[in-house]
Image (cartoon, rainbow, N blue to C red):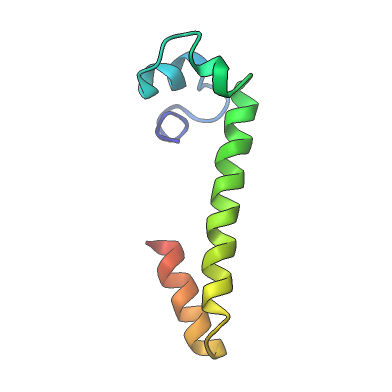
Length: 75
C-alpha cells in the first residue's frame, strides 16, 4: 500500500512492491501471480477487517455502534 500511495496504482509495478517488501524477484510469485492479485488480497483483508469492526459495533445501540465503527475505522 505504501508503494501505491507514493506512486499511484497505475505507476506502481510488482518490482516496486517486491523491493519494498524486501523479497527476491521470484519469491513474490510464490504468493501472488500478479499486481492485481496483490491488490485483491489487500482489498479482501481490509473488507474482512471492516466487516469485523462493523459486527462489533452493531452489538451496541445505534449511536454507540456508529461511534465505535468510525473510531475503529479511522484508527
